[in-house]
Amino acid sequence: MPEAIRQGDIPGVQLRRRQDLALTRDDAWRWLVEADKVARWLAREAKVVEGPGGMLELTGTGDPGEDDPGSWRERGRTIEVAAPKLWVMAFERLDAGWTAATRLTVRLHRVPGGCQIDVLQDGFQRLPLSTGITVWEAYRRRWKNALARLAAATG
Image 1 (cartoon, rainbow, N blue to C red):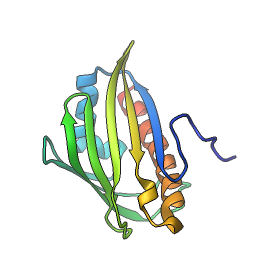
Image 2 (cartoon, one colour):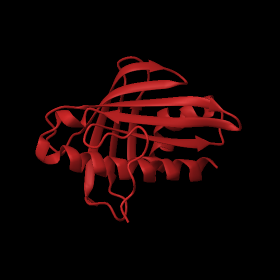
Image 3 (tube, rainbow, N blue to C red):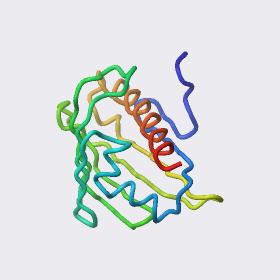
């Protein structure tokens, strides 16, 4: 059964995923910026350059059940960073011929018992109409799976 549209989602425009983590915000931040940790939940390989002017480079393969199980490469170029609570990137899939980057905002909020990771990816409407909604749906599934892996790895 298809997943219902969640609060914060606008199909073909933006998606939002949140996941509670049993970590402090400082510890959760390390799971965003240490390449060996990123590779355990978000990609097969990761390269991270922290700070202003930094970037995130990812290489991986699709999750089981995804439309595109093949390999992929992505890059996020830092727009704004305020460790350990905010990282905003111009985010793009390098091997898909995207004509524009999406905007990926990752926030870490303090909550009782740990923190919450809040992922907002928007700008899918800047992609060609023929692919924008498909790409949006693929990332909606990908973030769901990745954040579940993060919670399992840190729980």
